[in-house]
Length: 603
Image (cartoon, rainbow, N blue to C red):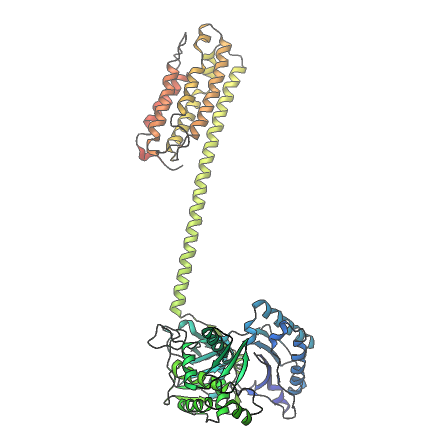
């Protein structure tokens, strides 16, 4: 007996719904691989396991959490054997009204709930103990619970479907063979030994409470007034819904018709037949109706396997009754004013949405073999069997496409990075080349200055000691680089010419004729300065047509040489290294090196 107790695993699941907060306890034998999970109830414990306070109230009521969970924990401590407290997990899942809150409000409430349960410390909690479920998750766990209780979770010989109509939404679920045209509504349930793909569309706003509000607002909008009459409420009924006053007419057919126009609208979808909101209809073998369908069935006293036509007949009969008569028959039932719209909505959803006929195997219940059908059971089964859940799963070939696309994308990024690096490297090399030319030019200028400082008696000696050939080579390289530039013009095309003309005019013939050697040296300084200035401007000139760069630059250099040769001196220099001859040679060399436009390259 002791060993049995030690092998029992307990789990507490709290469902934070729209009208109440409920707790359920489950247990199973961990030593048995396929042990059945059951609801655990201590016969000696009569404490309530449902508190009629929605957890969403905590957003404006600071005392809501203590009032809810104090009673919940007291009940749980009486349920679970004390020796099993520390090994018992407690989880809180928000649904319905919790989903109506903002993400920030949800986090605030769940953080407070977690802190409260941790402060109590009776039961253990995991990292995901307090969170809000999506409607798809809730529907998927419900399908798992239903099929596990039916014993079809392992074999899946038939397609078992479930329809749950809750207060704020309706959810349908069924196992499928193909995801064609329905992939966006498909989830994967993955157990260690088997997996299933289930079709789980959720209809937000198609819960019974939302239907009543939607129907009322629609009638008021059409009537243009706040006092309206509705065929979906019994004759003699008057009540307030939102800020509207509703008077009942009691007509099942008219109520069914009104709901068909809004909000149960049939729209186009990829399949040949559709449910509502453009969702394709898929086949199923058995349909289980849950929640509101079950409450409506039990109110009308119908059998679990009653045909849809029986619900229609009950609806017509009930909706034609007077409200006062029904009120006297069911004095303690607060929902009697709603069953007319409940049955009209339920049959409309079944017939027009799911294609239910009397030939359909329809079963409306809330339990299987005494075990309640609940998404909370599905969560415990997921914990026990280490289930994995994935919404809109990818097939292997779809995953392969994603991987290939990602690889191509990464490859493109790498190519772009490499190209940028090479471009930067080329640009850096060009910058280094320009810096080198500038350095060589300045070094040539320094050599000339040193020649002057050495006190040479005539300009020819100074010229001979100045590395004229180096200047010529550097000028030739500069012009070649200039000729290869493919840039847009920002200055006049002939801007080089005036600068070069200044070089020729810088040496004043009169100074040489008068034998003023110092003046000649001074004028030579101007030549040197103007040459540097010409080089700078030459580098700055940007041509609009690169294919003409060689011709324009060559002509400028030619003019430069001619201007030097035309300088009239008393004793023209015959030295081949003199400045005029060197510049002439530079121009001739440039014309020879760049003959065709295709020799021009990128900067």
